[in-house]
Length: 458
Ligand SMILES: Cc1cc2nc3c(=O)[nH]c(=O)nc-3n(C[C@H](O)[C@H](O)[C@H](O)COP(=O)(O)OP(=O)(O)OC[C@H]3O[C@@H](n4cnc5c(N)ncnc54)[C@H](O)[C@@H]3O)c2cc1C
Ligand SMILES: NC(=O)c1ccc[n+]([C@@H]2O[C@H](COP(=O)([O-])OP(=O)(O)OC[C@H]3O[C@@H](n4cnc5c(N)ncnc54)[C@H](OP(=O)(O)O)[C@@H]3O)[C@@H](O)[C@H]2O)c1
Image (tube, rainbow, N blue to C red; front, side, top):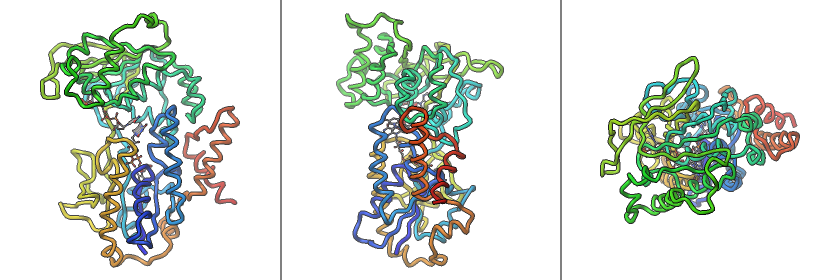
């Protein structure tokens, strides 16, 4: 029998488990999916925006894998300094696959980034998604103007959350505290700012177009700014997504006869380009008041150069949405430059040689880009490498082959098993019913663990 620990129950972890059990060559395989949270699904639960219910429902596909008889979910087990380390796991399991995602944010590296009112979008997303680590975070949406830096899909998500009517969000599983704060929000102007041109923005067309269909918001673009991008003027050679994005932006730049009177709606979403952040302005006592940008110009090679002209955009809330970043784990090789674990087809490399029995998949393998489906082939590649090594892994001498759950308990862990997670789901449905809403997420560790423990008592 081959016993594999998959660390992380996001898409890459679940797809790895699926690839391992849906093959015939190594039939006796048992997969233990460990997660530091008591809840499975990674960013599908704690990142995908609450109003994207169709994508959220992918959790049902992931669920069928985690309910497979040879897959065992063990939540509330944090691998690393706070819990079992790699050496300990290698004593219990024949192989360990790290699918831990990219938990932190990339930094802007400009003065003022840490001022009150300037936040990583990562933290804002975690807060409205009810990630228990974000339970004590507060976002005072007393700002009239909010500036989102970056033009990727996460930036679009947070712009949409700031611009949607709270009444529409009440139908989602958003936690009650975040919903109340958004309902009281005074934000009117939301700026989404890219350092390069519209044809180089990272958002996808469906997500961009959705900004224009929000009932309470109007999108404002500056035709002269879009025109600065040579590929906007002549989109023929662009990749399909960029070409479609440009078409959507062009539609917004050309006012139509039946367009609403400007200023009629509650929110204005300003899409700005060719502005590179150089400083977040404000002070420690009163917080952020503006962001200073340098205007850029295309350099003809896909990048931009500074022009020496500056512009300040006023805003009392800044969300830096410039990408996620992987974090190192003790004993696991890590490339600081890319924030990923070095690997060869999923086999973790230490000084260029494979570290026996240690693998990696998902964002911690490839970096923090790609949609849920991108993790499927990535996980499959890793699983295939592991299966190719199966004979050698099975022969490796490890500790006594006891029950992994008992071994983890001996190491001081108190895992939340699948039925504990089901109890959390039931508690969230109950909590939502009490609030007159559908399922509503429990936002803190205490609530989650208390709910999970009710399953132990029965
Ligand atoms: C805000 C946001 C919204 C997104 N929206 C969409 C969308 O709408 N559609 C789409 O297709 N894609 C979307 N994506 C992309 C998609 O979520 C990712 O491609 C995918 O989640 C990456 O999967 P992963 O398994 O590598 O990482 P994750 O999903 O982050 O999973 C990692 C898991 O590892 C666990 N973990 C971390 N460290 C440890 C540890 N030390 N011990 C134990 N467990 C640990 C975490 O708790 C987590 O459950 C979004 C991404 C973000 C950031
Ligand atoms: N609905 C969905 O399908 C969905 C939703 C959310 C996320 N996702 C996926 O999740 C992944 C992560 O998304 P993401 O938005 O975090 O990352 P992303 O797509 O890499 O976008 C990051 C943005 O930040 C900008 N940026 C980086 N460093 C900067 C700096 N120093 N100053 C100013 N701008 C800077 C980038 O500009 P440059 O291009 O100039 O570097 C880019 O516009 C993506 O693959 C995304 O598609 C999908």
